[in-house]
Image (cartoon, rainbow, N blue to C red; front, top):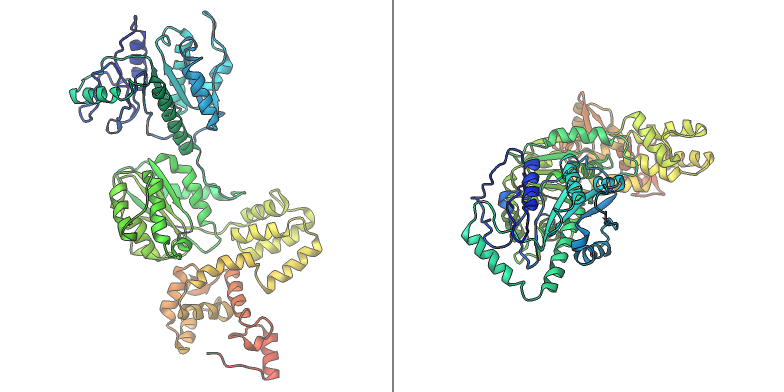
Amino acid sequence: MGLITMVDFTGLESDCIRKILQWVDTKIFPSTSQLDIAETSLSVKSTYGRVDVLSRSELHTPLFNSMTFSSPSSSSPPPSTPRWSYDVFLSFRGTDTRNNFIASLYATLCQGGIKTYRDDNDLERGEIISPTLLKAIEDSMISIIVLSPNYASSSWCLEELTKILECRKTKQQIVLPVFYHVDPSEVRKQKESFGEALANHQERFKEDPKVNEYEFMHKIIQWVDSKIDKSTYRLDIAEYPIGLESRIKELNTKLGIGRNDTTLMIEIYGTGGVGKTTIAKAVFNSIGQEFEVRCFLPNVRELLSREDGLVKLQEKLLRELSGNFGSFNNGSVGGTNVIKHRLCSKRILLILDDVNESRQLKELAGDRNWFGPGSRIVITTRDQHLLTYHQVDSTYEVQGLDNNQAIQLFSWHAFKRDRPDESFVKFTKCIIGYAKGLPLALEVLGSDLRGRSIQEWKSALEKYKRSPHKDIYEILKISYDGLDDNEKDIFLDIACFFKWNSVEYVTKILDGCRFSSSIGIAKLKDKCLINICDQFVEMHDLLQEMGKEIIRQESPKEACERSRLWFHEDVRHVLEENTVRSHK
């Protein structure tokens, strides 16, 4: 909850400012008549005060000679935050600050790429604020209110303030109050030690007011930057997010957003190319602002294959979740200890993408108590068994797209609309049947066929039947590459010979070939390379094609050099020519 801690001002003839702040206090916290800050070190016993909208445990007041800086609420807007036309709206009294502080602040904001609204017209007495100005307040993500000595004497400044407070309540607008040459003298329940600390802090800035103002302005820019980055930072997801919304809703239910008393670990699993990473990114964008800090670590499997990959990932995690961080002196062991220490009190969102070994989790998110209550750790993986050791709170299996969704996704990539051209309907159905709802295949093939003639489509379809598209093949083969030799042999045998056979039959045959088939089949199922339905072995058509392509690559020209033959013409040719070779 935000707090308004300022109750009195000095250096003003009237008590208008006091009344404004009391009014603001009642608007934000109507039930709060007195402020209890005994649990913090906050107490102002100097000529400086503070308007603060942070929680009590987060109050830290920077003090400057001519102005006081107040930090805003750490609570973030919900995922439905509106699209803003401006990053910042400046509310100020022109006669006090237009040609000095505001001129410099506005220029600095604009130079930093921060889209800022400043009203360049001084309203005369009796004029009312234009609808354009009120609309600008509504369309701004942040309002900076510069409270100067004559701010409260302006009826239109107070009207701006009223509108800003309304937007803070209804649109979760972020508000930053700045005291410019306004000297508050009291804060409720003053504490001697804090007053002395502020007095000491004040002395450091008395010598050079110009430096003071410049440094203060720099702090404002840094703060605005951090708020804009946090609010607007979004991961790029699919160009055409077909079927994504329903999956996010299902996953958000499992994430239990709003339950801040516990830390949850969620596993997203499925075959390669089914959209796990896309869904994880969409969740990150959707709920990220609900957390104090958030971090998305992509390609964990790939990065950890490098010599210093684990340490680099730990350092990246800490930089994003706890601010600036250098490097570890004791390797990954030191990194693990630092993660525990730095993040144990923070409510974080951490997404680990493409995890394929339990040790990766152990070093990056080994236990829930590494993170503060209310944290969420989301892991995407192709191996559903991987997280059994970590006892995840919930799992989510990503299924392929249904037929209608598949047609839409493919059509957007192939035709730039949600349905195929009439002359390509028949061929589109062939592609949909071939892809079996796998988003990766639909996107790759749609892009590959876009703008091509019917004859080229026919030729491409024939080619796909013989061997999969290389982009699809390479993604799917990642799962195969992670198998041991026994599991690879079992996978290839199922792909070539045993799809749609009973588990009992397949196990009997493979055991006869001295394979450890029971554990091997279980591992293939864990890694989403096969599925068991009614005690029969199933395999996605594209995974089967990938397996056959692996065999074909053993000898692209000579079938007799391959370890397995399933196409009857190849078998007949090898037998008739007596060119069978021995394979070990």
